[in-house]
Amino acid sequence: MSVETPLIGDFQPFPSASTEGSLAGIRVGVVTFPGTLDDRDAMRAVRLAGGTAISLWHGDHDLRGVDAVIIPGGFSYGDYLRAGAISRFAPLMEQITAAATGGPGALPVLGICNGFQVLTEAHLLPGSMIKNNSLHFLCRDQRLRVENADTLWTSDYAAGEEIVVPLKNQDGQFVADEHTLDELEGEGRVVFRYVGENPNGSRRDIAGISNAAGNVVGLMPHPEHAVEPGFGPDSSARGEVDLRGGTDGLGIFTSVLKKLVG
Amino acid sequence: MPRIVVDVMPKPEILDPQGKAIAGALPRLGLTGFAGVRQGKRFELEVAGEVTPELLEQARSAASTLLSNPVIEDVTRVEVIQEDAE
Image 1 (tube, each protein chain N blue to C red):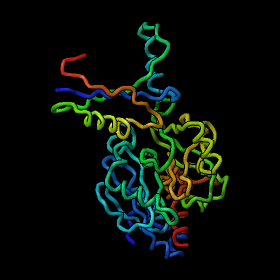
Image 2 (cartoon, rainbow over the protein chains, first blue to last red):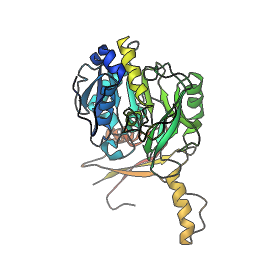
Image 3 (cartoon, each protein chain N blue to C red):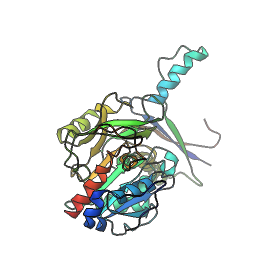
Image 4 (cartoon, one colour):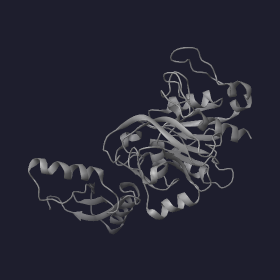
């Protein structure tokens, strides 16, 4: 397991990482497109959770035998045409789409922010994202409620648990027709919901959803930016934390690792 | 050189935040006669030779797969125009 040098301070893997060494055998791929920003952060989050992070290139045809895939945030292809519209046709996306829809044991896939937009354009998740209703780029710490703790990516949380992670985007308004929204609600596929004021006009305060099988999850906020004390939000839903001490997002990454080990 | 023009508009039921912002700016210029604005996209697909029915079909396919997202947008026009036309 390779460990990156921390930006500052001592590097302390989380207790779960050191006591459950088998997690390190789980390989989580992180895809880089031209214009991806948060791939390094996502890889670091995987390592902090105890797993092994594998870098994947959008132009490759090979998933390198990974056990799960994260499509990180950023502005793939400059968000030209529509956010995620061109990335969706990248060679690696064909592999991911095929592996994620393969029935039982299908590849777990997490899309964060731009990654969520890519997943909707690839039709792995329903709906779409349009500009924030405020028209502003938003960057703030955002409180979310974990509505569904049964997915591969949320099992380390309790249903109804609240978390605080950063939200930073321009095209964050989730839209879908009423029938699709009713279906998502009825099938428990709303995974994350905004708590408090709706930041961007998303229908029914939806911040994240899953596919019917529960292996593909997408969300607009950034759990990978709330995984390490000293580099996270200034607040946590679990009580007071030190400055930049929020690590509420780590559970996303430990969830999938533990599920895959089990 | 003929071109195939593809127009894409946000679906009527989808709120268009950009259009709304433009509608809000018009009165500041003293242009008060407009009840609303919706902003779409126009693509021009350039064709080297003749526009065959097969090519037009390819343009329709591009319009419905890459150029628009059917969840939020409608293709409102796929039409051949000749150079210096319009």
